[in-house]
View 1 (cartoon, rainbow, N blue to C red):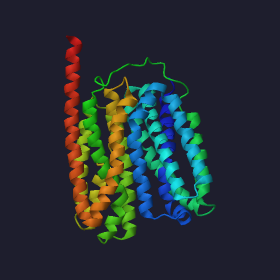
View 2 (view 1 turned 90 degrees about the vertical axis):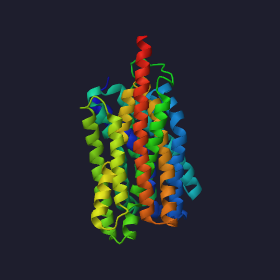
View 3 (view 1 turned 180 degrees about the vertical axis):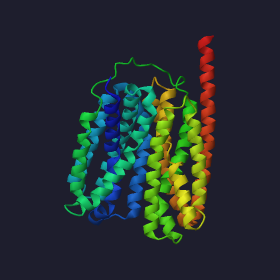
View 4 (view 1 turned 180 degrees about the horizontal axis):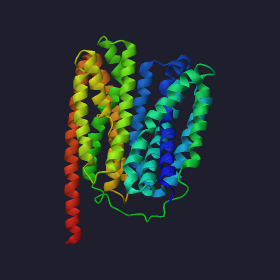
Length: 389
């Protein structure tokens, strides 16, 4: 088996390449919209559809990754993203073409994410698997960072199309880091029942609700803070602080997971409940409530995706990509619904009302996560009894 370090670097590289198109488009929206003629609502719509297509693609892509292996599907994802980025640079002369190419990227993103999950599950030792999933989830802020750097460094100097060309080259740079061959480990023929599909579906719904509230936090925090009288500079710095705290705790969660024998989903549930407290605080006026609410909302309410994927993989080692695809369907669905619902409530009510609805949503997510965990425990107990009978 390849070294754990190379595998982790490869998984982060593939995941970063897979998610880069949507974040790059968001960062370059001002320059792109000036040429293609769309407004912020148009950008929000394409991001929503991106996550909607991702939700629909998750289960089929999970089957493809299990069927053809991580080596093949990782390469397809990377090459597909690079081709789409190049096509955007070359032929995206209208909003419609841009949307169509980004929706193609959504399939590649799902494929790359699930292929990376399978790669880590097959090649990383159990003692470092939690940290490896934490590192993999760091790919999202890495993609955000690269996209932000592209604005002053490329878009404002030589043009936004060149940013996509360079991004396509970066994506192809992940190709040598994909798995070199399929795993030699025997493939399992686990049935959906053996994968505790019912429990995973409940956990997926919980993850979707949590992702819906957390995605809204990242998108609307600055606008909501400015609406409450906070200066734009302080609001932006608060968002940056929350992102750093969230990234740090994702890594810490993974490191701690390797030092626990279980209880990972319970930790996810606790993180969601604490995140709900943070969202509720955002409805309270004043800078202290903003800072504490952001730390709790980002630091705990959005620090759990890697830990949850790790827990699901540990519980379903025979089919990690298929199992995580069920949970990811919920996460992507939340990414689709959350910002739309939050924006509607904020526009027709107020930002404090939207934050309170988000807090209730995240609290319900935590409670459903507890229910899903109990269903998993019951499923494992029943399976053990059946095996010994």
